[in-house]
Length: 458
Image 1 (spheres, rainbow, N blue to C red):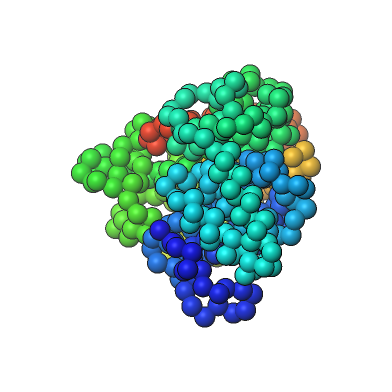
Image 2 (image 1 turned 60 degrees about the horizontal axis):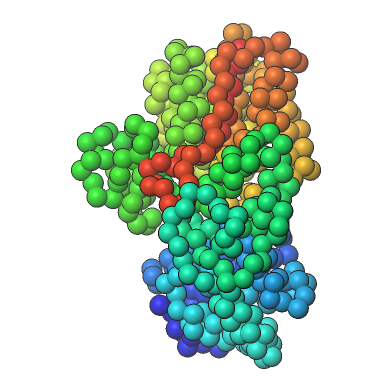
């Protein structure tokens, strides 16, 4: 556990000694506040910390981001004016402190309060420490006992759901009376997103999706033989055959994968895309993965079609660089710039368009994405998806297969887009599949999967 004196006399001057875990988190959250809700997705920089402090900082930061709306709501019940009206550093130290009070039952309250107060005095102003002390102690007074697994939120109990399936019972009624508003603040979702789901899903399904997104998404590995999964203590079999959940330290995973080129980090929902292609395109001479990202599906395509040549590309320069690095020296995978794809017009037996989307099927992994989802953002993505389709359909060979996929749950990005493609480009859907996320807080990680959508079109 990090003690208060480890914070030292940090201020805005250059830091010449080791930082503390909490200091790293508070500073990073303060940087994010002016960006809200369009948060920076880069992970917190903690490479200079000791391993234990690294894990603590990453855990606190992850929970503060995951439960931002919830924490801000709880703080507002104990503040004289809304949290958002305070300066960014003050907002940050209160958010980080509240995250520890409610979401980390193993962290001593006195350490959380003492270090938060010390940080505020040194980085905000001297009198800020008194306010931080008072507010966090009110948070502690609000927090009651922790109760074990309950499958659904009990609207009669004023409790806060945790990512491990437990609930913190609050000593006072603070949540909104409206059921959807209450679900939004208890699970840290924008109300507009839950209303969108509520227009097409039953309330119990909206609740299940919101709870699912509280989970700590496990690292799932595909491509391992059953005997390898069975013999290792750092792996456990997933409920879907052919997958395993990584239980070892994150730092050990790259070495494990490097020793097993056939293995890859991939969720079953993502894996479904290439499996669907394989069922409907048993033979392919040329495959183009036009929105290849980091190349996970590209590698899977190479394994699924051992006699095919594969062209991978991505419009984002950083991701394109990662693709080039990943497939350097490959005899079958060629990475090309987006503007050069047109040189392959009319040649692709399979064209994979894994398009940018709202990520609503992967919000347990892409925590920051849920805060951006609104009608304006959705409409901009729908327009972008249409443009990507229009720009790349010319690459398809006569009779070639188009695989349109997203990691979204929204019909506007999925079924409606697939039917738009068919209507305006004289094609037909030969198969499609939508998949909702699986798993709830408290479930075994082996039951977890993301959600997504795939349409196969000729």
